[in-house]
Length: 241
Image (cartoon, rainbow, N blue to C red):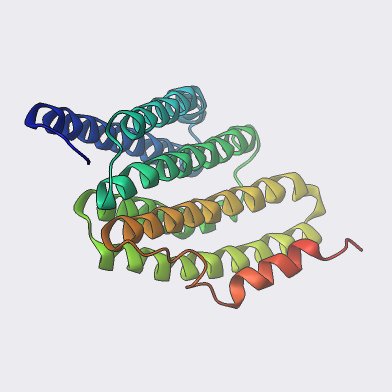
């Protein structure tokens, strides 16, 4: 900060602390929604699914609050160096947390529909993917809270395993649709659910990259990607037969 007195510095520190607390609150709700959506699926608890869907508005409002808090800090205090990186990254982290909550809503909505039908034999295969996605979002936010770069980098590395599991299950669900076409709707729900969980991992990676940016001033977006991103692009662009 430029040309500040002790009073202004105290106000600035308070504003940064409030911004941080808002982010951690948002993270707590987003993680709770993901947990509840998963339990709603695995335990066939539609009440939990409905709670997740209802709480998404609170996450949206927190994202707007964080954007307002961050913009006010930028305008009033003109932060520099790491303080500036914290403010800029906070807005990106809030956006990713909002999307994590959106993915939880996707899981909850599809689980609620599945719960009206007989339990699918392959439903339990989702559990390891759910667990890993929860661990990644938990650890990236722990890395943010602690300024822990090694933990952030481990999130990026572990996301590759989530990608692998997503691909494996997608193939398994596709085979199930071919063998049991009468259950195609259920297996489509499972396909979209595992894709939503894979995307939670992508958002965790984005947050982990922001932790590195905050702590080291280094932008590592895209530099750690392997052929996975290229493979996704090719699959997405492939024409339908």
